[in-house]
Amino acid sequence: MDIDVDLIRRDLAQLVSIPSTGGSDSEVWVQRWAAATLAGVGLEVDHWRLDLDELRARPDFPGEEVDREEAWGCVGVSGPGRPALVLNGHLDVVPPGEPEDWTNSDPWHVREQDDRWYGRGACDMKGGVAAIVAAARAVADHELARPFAVHTVIGEEDGGIGSFATLLRGHTGDACIIAEPTGGRIVTANSGSLTFRIEVGGQSTHGSMPQRGHSAILAFDHVHRALLDFSARRNAKPPAPFDADPWPLSVGIVQAGDWASTVPDRLFAEGRYGVMPGESFDDAQSSFEAAVGRAAATHPWLRDHPPTVTWPGGRFLAGHLPDGDAFGDQVSGIVAATGTGATVMAGAPYGSDLRQYAAADIPTLQYGPGEIGQAHSIDESVAIEDVVRCAEVYARLILDRCGPHRDAPDHRASRA
Image 1: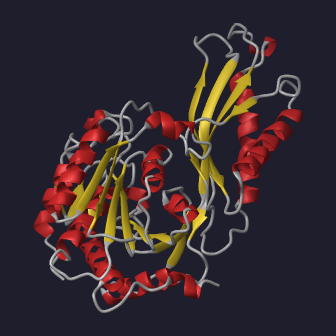
Image 2 (image 1 turned 180 degrees about the vertical axis):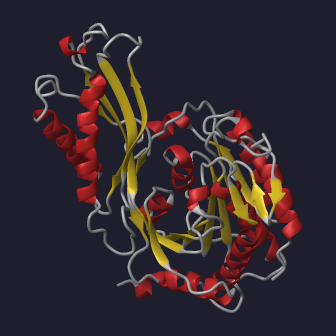
């Protein structure tokens, strides 16, 4: 299998140089790059402007956490007919933080060192997209009995508007592999997540006499401890294929007070709340709000001044590959054939676009270069051999499902 590492390096360098944070103009530019690149490897490209108002008006809209005035979809297909395989990758990235915290002070420039590529998005997940493009390039001269498709999307980091719009446009397939970083494992299930916002009230007074008021910070500390206990109970006995703490709760933003010598009378906290498989958003939200209510009922101030909970931002349901689906075994066999050792089916504690494809009755799993711990980090990086190996797996998977000597396996025949 001819995987051109130099072209992967070039593609990744170009992708990382486009600072495609959510809601930025670069989200538009990066999809232009994808459309031109997929056309250049011989795919028929659908590159369209998303109707944001129409998408947001739908009751099943997955939500957003950034402002967008313009967004584009991009799909490349190798030929007519329903694709036997979809390869999905998102091209939006999270902000890089302070550039001076990066080793080379430029998160938008790929640095190669110790057999790794560094840069914002190198791991999550422009390295995966570069591997997909390399696979499409590697099979360009092969005769295929059925087509494959490449879906590049934006907005995955803040809800999933890109995949949502792509599926609504009618771009589907018999199975989907998402190039999220999985650390060599095959991820067949995701937990979901919601963004919560808690407002806690207090009573202000002069900082020299705090006993005369009620600190919103101390009141929130009581609620926060109760929520951590609530989360520990929810995560006590996770089912297979999930590891420990698969749907955690964490607080990412806390804002309180406006003067150092005043007891704060208002606190706002925002965080991430994991949603369990089979749990609806309504049930997940009700459980969380009940936990906040129980905490308030045992606090002398909050008992009469209960916190309020709202739910802004993206909404990620859990998703999974159906038990016994042949697609998992097919990918596992191809991964093993590359000589990388035994593969492990795993569950991931984060949300992804897997749940959107699964909800469209498309068997979907994740397998991609890099470790999830590198995602969103300072000095984000991916091992070069991981990207090359995944490109080879994707190319072999395309040939296995779409090649001239066989039809794509019927995933439905092996469902338990």
